[in-house]
Image 1: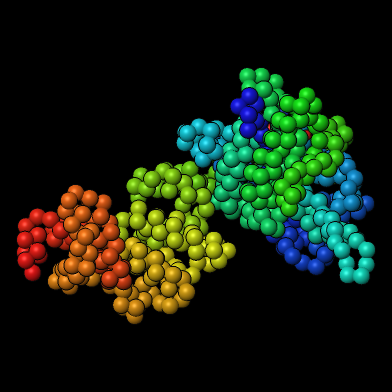
Image 2: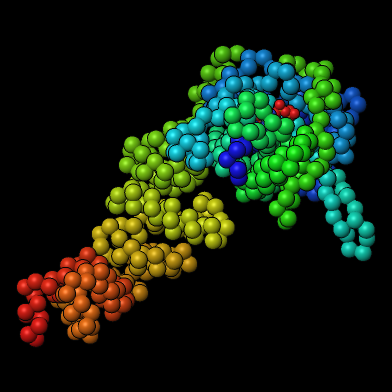
Length: 495
Ligand code: ADP
Ligand code: MG
């Protein structure tokens, strides 16, 4: 990207709230049922029906507002946003417009790359409650032409739309921000954040302006991005596209675009509506939502320890590197796993953290499973790490043991015994191997003695090879140095 352009991004994130029933009806919000079995007359907006607000949705929105240090409105209002779309047959969506329930929040990102690890404040303009629409499904049926179906099960599902200030300055920052929101809603237990099922998705508003210019450039909106990777790729594509257009003397058209992940490009979907196209008006069927201080304080009392606080505690309590603490606290389940493992281990928390972030996370990724379903439980990992800490096995052999644990072959101790992986710490036994290796490599030994210190690594490698990796590396190093030089030389040389 050219240094002459500054990138401006604002995100609108839709988080589906984890209520059992819809925002204005008693219909179930469960995912994956037969199409059109979970939309009741209220969700469909039949004449004469009356919506009734789900109190859990309000509590969840309030919880979010408090978690991002926002103002929770004591009075907020539902409005009708009027438009027609096949997945919205009733012709309007109930949302909040002028008086949203949450305003003026903030969060901090540290891993967006723009501030050299310094936290950057990102403003949250507002978060409002609204209902979701249905879903259009386009498919090609065997032997038939293409057809489109409408599944209205999602209609009326409660959403929290979280709108950021245009404070983000790169695709990486946008992803860091989105991850932070994701982790906050999951910590709060107000959304499952499942991106495959569409429970957490975002629209990215992107513009560029000549560096130094104050006023914002014309933006485009990239709709319905449902993975962190797509958010990053779509925004980066869009930035390049806009810069190309502007550098060729063209203008950016304010429009909504769709990201095509197969082609890694964005293309126009529709020209952008203005707010006045929607003819918002207060929904006459719903009373304003009025809450008092006592209510807000009662909700505040239910706030859990949030990601930033947990990260700071991990650094202070376990002496972890800030970066590692950040990775471990991104997900509550991962943080809980680490704490359980470190409580069960005699080894230092730093070593446990390395294993959770390293081998364990890699294995989870490889098998595509969540930490909750880990094949090695926290106590199992703790036992393995303890065998490294007490020098029963080396870190390298531990990876082999871990793989066997992951494959269900038993506990760390069982596998170490069954496979005979215990480190050789017996001095006489190691000395024998070291002597043999030196004897088999006379020219390298001579070079080492002549000053080629780097060859120590070669010798260590040979000893490890001869012992199947089971020699204690520190002991081997000391023995080799001793034997290759110094007093031992004359003894060894004479034998
Ligand atoms: P709308 O309701 O039409 O989507 P908003 O004014 O509410 O528009 O803004 C939506 C999002 O777009 C917000 O996250 C905001 O920060 C962002 N945004 C607004 N103007 C720009 C711009 N010029 N460049 C990038 N993002 C922008
Ligand atoms: Mg928008």
